[in-house]
Length: 430
Image (spheres, rainbow, N blue to C red):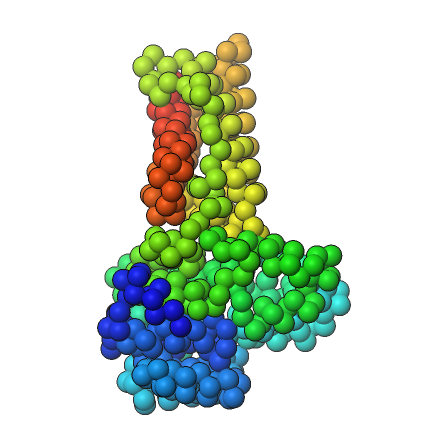
């Protein structure tokens, strides 16, 4: 357990005092380290684990470290087992404030090789188990107007473990749906945690199969999803420390995908060198003016073409990231800006074509563009806001003053270009 990490992130032994947390799959790996971290911060931790040996070991470890814990042998895919988990948790501690749906199973093989039984089991544990957990514990959280529900996600679209990755993608969707359904005054926060590639027993087991099927060495596979701030795998204790920080600040994470890297970086515990904001490409020096006084179609076209170059640079930066980090960055961009990077590339290209056509004879081109003006303005304003938030992200991620200065200059230029194009279209067509 990284007590030093927790302390440097502002946590202490009272941070979760009085809270009760249920962590499924807490017998080993991230779940075990998270349970230890939560207990150190004062939470009473219920270890929901199907394997009695590892469950008891985690319980004894936490108690030996001075924390309060209770092991309840649990099959998260079985409603009666989860109902019993709730009964025992309430009997011991009176309530449940935090639910971490961490339990999982993985099946290795190609889609054609894996039997339907492997798909069914993965679905039952990884997805159905999370739904059962929510339906079991959420009602009391809503009644008390206080609670936190967390799903653990992963990348998507990787081969030879399709049931696992498909279930993790489904968990993200489940989380977004649940966050949307909860009223603002519900008092319950829902977020998704993305660990990245972490040194756990489960990951080590995957090394016996995945690299060979993907035509990679174990070393190449480990570095496939390069973790920000780490050379290779992230230690489970480090991941759990960042995970615990997000749980303490769950209200700020509602409806979002979060990771351990940001809080660790902001506390100066890791040095992030390869992120989308830290690896921003320099923009052209001959940037267009951001004033729209007397804006012409040519001026708006210049801004639109500049936006195309910016989005091409954003795509390059995102594609250079490791597969796991790329998923988080792409998802955050889409959430903030309303479109994917590829969608924005197409939008900028189409807008440039429409602006070029304004000089052609006839009024149809102008009317076509004017009809889409509200959508363009709203979208460009969201894109500008995304780049503004990127600036705030960079201040947390990038510790080197000179690198931060360069990144902020790039990001501020991107924000100004999107804002200027929005104003230019308004003046030109409004």
